[in-house]
Image 1 (tube, rainbow, N blue to C red):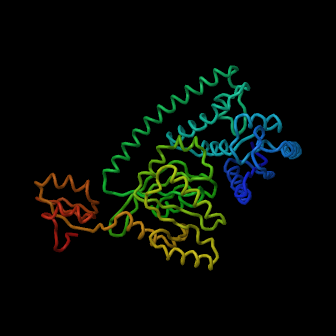
Image 2: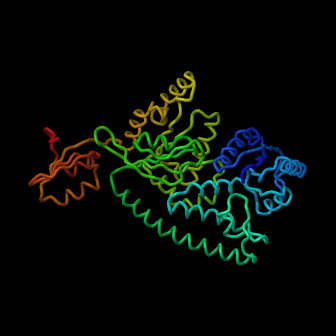
Image 3: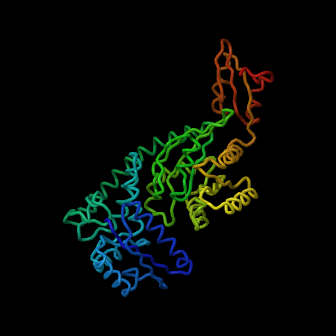
Length: 422
C-alpha cells in the first residue's frame, strides 16, 4: 500500500474535539509505514454502524473517492471487527486496514532483535487468526505488506491449524528467551545498583535523551516507533556513583492489546525500575493528552506506584516566553518535573540531580579497609553497597562505596575515618 485515504469516526463530544489531532497521528503512523495520506475523511455519529462502522452514505462517498483518487487502500483510525473489515473491503473494492493492523506492521518493520521479531509475529498472528475467512488468508500475508492477501491455503481449517501451530511454537521460543531475561533481571534486582526506565509517548525524544545521558549514538528519528528493542546502559555521576538506564518502546493511545500481551516481558523492565523518567514532547499542542495517555498505560501495566520524574523535552522548540512559563511551573514542583532539551543539553544536570535524589536517597560515600581474611565481609559488600573504587593490597582491600548508613553499621570495624587512600 503506497497511497491511502484516512478515515476517523467520533461517537462522543470528547472524540469529536480530538478528531483533528487523532487524524494527524494516524497520518504519522501511515508515514512511518511508508504510506502517503491522500485524503482525510471524518464522520460524527451517535454510535458505530454494526456492519460498516460508518453510515452507508459516507461509505458510498469514500468508495467514489477511492476510485477517482486511485488509492491503494483505506486506513481507519479505529479497530475494526473481522466482519466490518470484510464488509468494507467488499464495498470499497480496496484493502482496508485498521489502526491495530497499521501499528503491527510498523512494529514488524522496526523490530531488530530475535525476541522483538518473535513478539511482533505473535501479535500479528493473534490479530490475524479471528480474521480468517473463506478467502484463504494464510501465513503468506505476514510478508506481503499492509492490506495484501496471499494465495494461502484452500481450506480455512488448515489455515487456522497452521497459524495455531506457529503461535504455539513462537510462545515456546519466547518463554525460553523470557527465562533468560528474567534471570538477568533477577540478577540486577540482587544488585545495589538502581535502574531507571525511560517511558513516554512515541516520538517524544526518549532515545535522544538516552543518548545524551549515556553518551551513546542510538538510532533516533522523528518517525513514530523508531525504537522497539529495549537497551540498558550505565550512567555515571562525577563522583563515581552510577545507575543503569533503560530505553523502552514508546506508548500510544489505543495501544493494541495484542502488543501489550506480546511485549509483556519487555514491559517488565518498566515495572521493575527504581524510577521512571516520563519524557513528554513539550512542543506539541496536545502534550497534556499524550502525558495522560502514557500515565494511563503505566497504571494498566502495574507501574503507577514507581517514583516518576516528568521530563518536558524539546523546550528548544518553544518560544522564549513559553520556556519561561514551563520552567517556572517546574520550579513549583522540583521533585516531580524538569524541563530539558535533549539536543542542547539544557536542564540535563537538573534532571540528573533529581534522579540521584530518588535513586540514592540518603546514601553516603564511605571508605572501607577490609583485611584479607574477612572473606565474608568482602562478598556481602558487593551485594549491599555500590562499589565506586576497589584496590587490592597485600593483607587487605580498600573500597570506596556508596551505601545507606544502615548498611554501613554492619561494617563499622572496617570504616576508615581518616584520609582516603584515593
